[in-house]
Length: 516
Image 1 (spheres, rainbow, N blue to C red):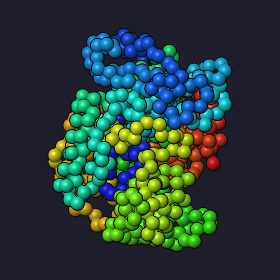
Image 2: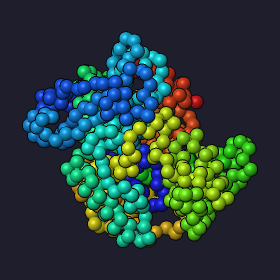
Image 3: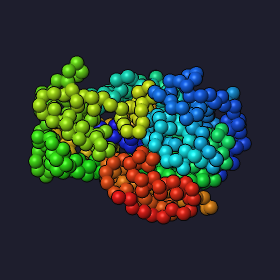
Image 4: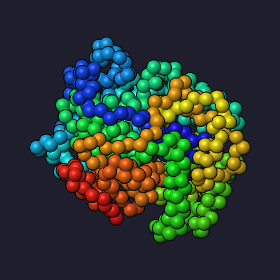
């Protein structure tokens, strides 16, 4: 979901808001109505062959195979569902076989919403995981190489930003919504959210021939995983949720928490800038030498780029939204802080080229993932968000308090006067209500504990989310001290990775822990 402000926070999580309060059922409850989807024939081929040869930029020789798996577009149709009788979607799936004795399947659920999940297969899995698990990744419905794709206006990223007036902003957002309906299809757009994504996981479970899945979910993917644990308590053996969404929060509460998280991280970057950044041999900190004044310096830079956009070679000149877009992704991991500060220093010198490169990167860039699919993330982010949380209205007055709360939750990007009126959000203009609501989760009787992983200074899924979710599901929590968003099997923290491996080996053996 796009913010009403000029700041565009990490796409990972802007849409990870309120969730469908799906009733707890056993996976077998759906076997009858969906039997044809669970038992569908699937043509697994080496990922270097057929259309799958375009799915990975460089598929390693690890024996991975790829396939398209069909799922119902609408799971709520009455009667028996079969691929021949109902509208379907096709999910692009890749499987990396266990190297030795297989103990099960580890299904990877990626972030966003809107991020392709296939590249997660290239993560730095520990030897014990590679040996004993088939590892499976997939592109969610509408995303990446799955079909039909979410298609909106190619310039949609600009249409949802603030324009010169409230009226102009809402007009642009209505045009964006209309382009999504036209390009994707009204029916497809209604069934592109987390509700359907949850049931897709169980179809994958059936197709993979597993009674129970092992799950590793990251960021927004933890929302879908939490819904799966609630809806299919018998469908999982173990579930690791890294960078956790709190499913009890509504959309506004979630976004306020994110804004506060980004504010905290901005303050930490300001302190980093005058300390470790300078220690790297930089001549000066572009945010000034006093962290307490960093916001004022940053506001001055934003105002300067508004009044005098900074040339960026053959690309468009740098304006405030570019500086903020680059910041939103650079703050997610400490590895991005120094490149961002270098780019900000270049902007102050009149060179916008480095900032343009950062602003143009994929949203939610992860060091362990290489892009392998069409760049539809911004469109998918908006569409899946609204499919989840939309409450359509034309009553602008009814939205003012919530939007003001969002605006006031962070101050680092307040380089202009506080608006006297806020425009309707893209999801306010969506054609249908969202199918997800906040709910308080619980763990089904007899189901395994879930392992929650949080980082102390995560800007986009605050650690308190993981703390609350672990409490609701009476499950263990691992907290990593430090900064950043999602770390499991990223080759970053051996303590976290070892605890996750131990949990996968025995889901009942893991207890709360803190990793330095």
